[in-house]
Length: 274
Ligand code: DGL
Image (cartoon, rainbow, N blue to C red; front, top):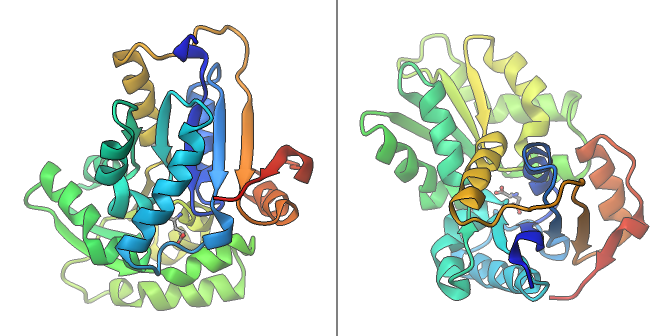
């Protein structure tokens, strides 16, 4: 088989990875993708690292069994816990996560080096962003805030409104005080579910704070890797995208419609068991 025409596998615990998939499809229109949302076991972000490694390995295997040429872990929690394990388990398949890309975007955006990471409890606990940011800027001052409730709100398609604002204010309260010394000038969205909250977050943080996420930078890194490995698609037509879910396809289609801002049907989704 000509590997260059094989699809790129993308997985997330749920729908958040669709924000990464969108960026990938925009940057790589000739590539085909298989997206897997492990919706039956969402959230990953409150779970133990060993559990996340086990879930991520099963999700990755389902994609590898379908003949992918590259795997993108479009989930920060799974990247933080399982990137080295997946790289070892599926070598020589190239496996990429989203944290290095998010860290690069944050360091590039920050003038003061004061960076706030918003992520799941698991990603914050593992200090994955701290390590990745500090490797790029050893003098960076990094704070981390777990925002677990954002995942449930995003999967409910509640991207704005009173409930979102109340939750966001509560999470951001320690960083909004005008008297705060180490006020972040950059906020990195260290969870693929969080870009849907950018308007609410920006209105609370104010225009002087830059909000970055890893979607675009990941897409750029994938493009570079495909070129390096000579794996880029040789097709001249638009690639296609298949969707897999481990829980109900109706719910997947409904929530995916909100995330992708486009009509999505349950017939477009295949239900699988891991
Ligand atoms: N998408 C996951 C991430 O980027 C968070 C959702 C979850 O907790 O499963 O960390």
